[in-house]
Image (cartoon, rainbow, N blue to C red):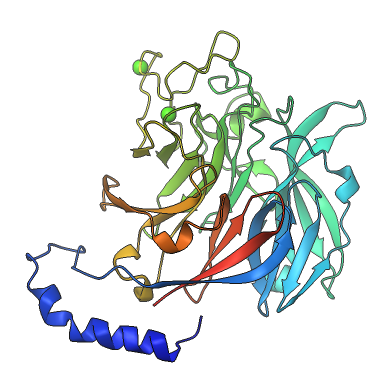
Length: 383
Ligand SMILES: [Ca+2]
Ligand SMILES: [Ca+2]
């Protein structure tokens, strides 16, 4: 984590090797011939079971969700405590349970945050929903102030989403899954297979959403559609918004989001997964992925853009965690968003399935593992 004698020697070696680097062909623009960093991976928290998301809540503490236990946890140094939270009200099934966390922009002052979870309604039916919650001053207990979005579709728990991202203008994005129902992604009256956008202070659809004047609230909430199972959402330094999602047996995708875009998943009739991830034969324009896995899939999950000079050549890349692929893929895009190259550092290929990536203010990257038992939150530092 902090510079050690060994890492200082590494830095010296890099400085000494500068003449060799400058002998490389001249680079253009922002693509200076910087080195790949040395990545140091330490275990921040261990003994977890399928942690889904992690966010820093100040004072070195981390807020963690566990999907299947539906526990909300705080890691503080070496100790782990369970927050008083109604875990028994979370519907847990398959890929659905307690999932993503986003912190309010004013979290430091109002202790407010947002959670995505499975839920059992009074009727016994299930949905996936997003709640707004608030910590007590002692950070031992949370209280729900509102449900922001309800009725995201749920069937067996398969393809339940659900990723949250608070963007720099204060909008909350919600990446949803298609719930393995073929008609959901192209339907403008289903919240499944979408990225939704709303104001988390009021629960109202964001005023510049593409169908903001539609009759149905669920239509007004839609930002983009035609997704299969959005597991990652990220905002680039230039403000652009990106998603990562799972393909069936081929073509996981990273997409560049813009209001009203159709990303082309339409697995009908029934739930026909032989359909293309981006079906251009649909009416209108379907937007191609900016990166796709081809065959086999690696189950791309959480994603975040990397910031900080210590990351060298990886600065500005999109870091995408992979479940089945058991790695983090760093994707370099041009300013215009075209893929240039990808890197998968060996240092991140020995921890099994990886779910979420969270960049800290100091430039360290947190990564959650998703192996079911003895899972961890890892801290990745670049040197
Ligand atoms: Ca697509
Ligand atoms: Ca078309």
